[in-house]
Length: 493
Image (cartoon, rainbow, N blue to C red; front, top):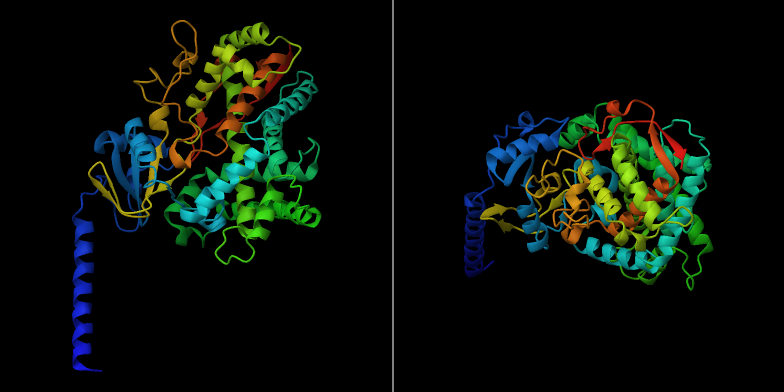
């Protein structure tokens, strides 16, 4: 090689090294969010209570402010605590915070695919297609409202057949809610006696319990260690495989009977999209993303709403005076002979306030679903490196004492004006906000109102124990707040 060429290469190498060194020095010198001392290997675990992580983070926010960082094992996480910082990040800097932060256990199961766990261009294309297709099949339209009304009728008859015996309503509620999303993605509902579907719901119920266990949280701290140890996380993997088998069987049947000119449901539409992009080697529409996206929709369309209804019934048993006011409003606006519809909601401010207060009070996902920054980001004079996981905490918004006085108390007055009209609140963010807001928010709102109103139109709730012993505090978990198991009798009105 010529001496001049050698000199050029040497100089370019030197310049590159200097630039890299300068960049690293700059990133280190940038102001980082404050946080507790993180020890080698274990990170900030000594400052966190695995059994009540939201409470631990609240205490840290009191010491370090609304923007701080913790470390779980080797991973740094930025926590946003309070309405102002959550809004500023997810709305004012929406693009910067639109990535998905993936915890190790979910990375293992979902591999960054599907609509919930993907990021970047894959997520943008899948979300755009999913929202468009769901609208095509009735989400947010009159057709899906009628399906919810029909399913509410099936549910009411099922509850009536319990003949006032006390029982745990969880499975009935899960099944009713699941049938709505199933009608959209699979093209049909499942009978309440369908054994295969009941087995599927049992797998999902068990996974919900495992997902919120301490062992699962420890897996996300130390995946390489926990992977080699026995634990519930291995059972969770088997359950996911069972759910995938159920979905795969339906996918196969759809592909065998597909009529491209007449798609029946979400799966058909996705398969048609796959065929259209068959020659595109960079396409995000393939068998794996179809399976993962279907699973995402099925899980999201079942868990949140059924849990809200289950928790709502428990709360109403604790406060019979609230239930009585809803009964009076239902009798005045709807009566006993027709099904509740969404048009009734605007004329039922008290019931609407109760539904909102249930969602606020239960604080289903206190930590939110983790986000990540899509690039090196400046936020409130702090430097957050690209791909850093971010927790915009919903509990800090839903339990803001300035917006909701005495937030620990269940009070429909949080959403009522002095004259009894419904009061909106910008702090009502149970579905999160910004570009990662829940894709099924409209459907969930419709389901919660119609199902709950239909139940209370037909029944009075009677707890299996003395009302003063009804416990509405949640099972303290890692990710989601769920009600303690209970039994209730449905007394016909």
